[in-house]
Structure formats: structure tokens, C-alpha cells
Image (spheres, rainbow, N blue to C red):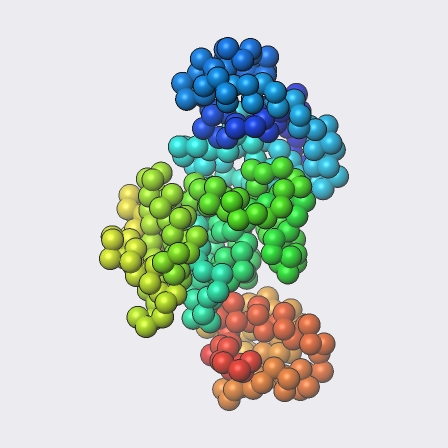
Length: 384
């Protein structure tokens, strides 16, 4: 897919305005509504700026003094170098679901591609410090939803987010990662390969300048984008203080569905999801539950999604002699044939397959996400 081109003149003006001090998404929207364009807002006097409801004289002075400080030329050059494209709210390629939230990002940085198919999206979020159960449920649900034609949105964080992206990728589906930093950075750094795979099968996006670091204050605003891109948000595992609950709240505030996967009743990681269920979030165990939670939209998609999910489930249960349907790589097939119903340690698998440790690790992750094997505590693996 060719790299989309943006209206560079408009983007330059929008970047100058949004990067001025005290201009967030809400204030930016007020400025555009009042002046009619970013160009006029950039040329407005302090008194004109101060006349806007909620701005005030002090803020107007700060906006006027800083609206030209951001080096737009350097930003655009770096974006071109990194093969990142930038769109604003007026661009027809801007995600329509995101455009409908209360405070949509005026500018989006995108590496990868966005398409009409991404309008059918589900967000999946949860704890960074998750359990093996949580990882498996996130991967499983993401895999089946992706097989059914949904784009999976998450934040590429450690834990549940990573498992959700990997589940979508294992199904050959699309996935979108929303970063809490600029796209010139990858966070967490160990997800560099995942970042590259997502770019090939979807997009990594951010509203932040390319060089912004992954600071803690960036993540709550990032969560509104995750929620805003989708029809609904599924929380897999979350403690009471988890950022996943912020995403769920923002989904509710923007009239999106909130769903939750139940967990173990004695696990602190289940507390947040269970509270959401008590408060009315739909309990999710299957793709069909997601369809039911989506109401009218789910009814329209039910036949298609049910058939696609059934087909995906049948493929996952495919026996060894029909393994070609699963499109396993050479190392994956070797590892799968090496395993049996008795638990085997990863070191034993490396020795028996004569594969590099890195290849075995990657193959085991992929096979687990495809539902063919199960991981047990102590780095043990068995066929399902």
C-alpha cells in the first residue's frame, strides 16, 4: 500500500496551533469553531483569543507567545524519514468512530494503514502484570474476533495489550496500537518486533509529537483514543487502579459498550473486571457474547461473525495430519510435532528440535496463540 499523502499546508498550521502551550484537544476545537480555521487562530490577537469562552487573558497570552515555537519543518522531515503520515480532523481518512468522541485528537500520527474495515473494531485492554489465564483469554478472544473480521485495538503495553495484539496477528487479522509516546519511540522497547508486525497488519498511531517520551501523564489521554476507535471495550484483567478501567470509563462517557471477562474470584487482578460486571458491563465468554453486547450492530453482524468464528474454531482443532490449513511455519511445525500430551520443559524442546532458543520461544508463543498448545507453570508446554 502506497504511503498516503496529506495536505502539508493544513498539517503545518494545525501542528503549530496544537503544539502551542495550553492548547489541548478541547481548546483547539474552541479555537477552530470561533475563528473558522487554524490559519486565522494563528493570526489572532491576544484580546481575540481571550474572548473565547474558557480561555481567559493569561492563557491567551501563553497561546500567542508559543504558537510558533514548534519546529514543524523538522517534524515533517522526520515523519517522512520514518514513513509516518499525519492527518487532521478534516481529513476524510480520519477514523469516523474516533471523530465522534467528545475530544478527538486534532492531529494523528500514523505508521501503517487505516481502512474502512477498521470501522468494525473492538478494543481490548487489561493489566500489564497479568496472569497466564489473562494472557490466554485475551489471545483467544482477540484471535476469534479477528477471525470474524474485527480489528483489535489496544495500547501495545506489556501484558494483556500485547496478548491481544498477538492474538489478532495469529489469526491474520488487523490490529491497531495506540502509543502513549511519539512514534519515533517504541514502548515498551521489547515490543519492537510486535510494533513492526502491527504496522504490517494495521497501524500504530499517536496524537503526540514524534519524539515525545512515554511519560505517565500521556497514558490516560491515550486511553480515550483506544476507547474511541472502537464499538466497544473489553477489559480482560484489571486491578482497582488499572489504567484499563480509565479506558472503560472513557468508553462509557462516549456511549460505547463496556464488556469484561470474568477471572478467578480470589485474584486481585479480577477485582476491576468483576466490579465492572457488577455495575452492568456485559460478561464476555465468547464472540457471541460480544455480538449480544453490541445490540443492534451485533444483530446485523451475528450470522457473519458466528460463521467466521466457527470456522476459526474448527481450524484451531485441526488434527496434525491436516496441519497445513493452519499455515504453520517450519519451526512451528517442528515444535508442534515434537510435543505430546505430557508436559515438556522448554529446554527439552530446544534439545529435541535442534532449533535456536529464539526460534523455539517465538514458535511456542505462536502455537499457544493459535490454540494448539498450552503453557503450564515452570516453562512447561503440552499439546491441547
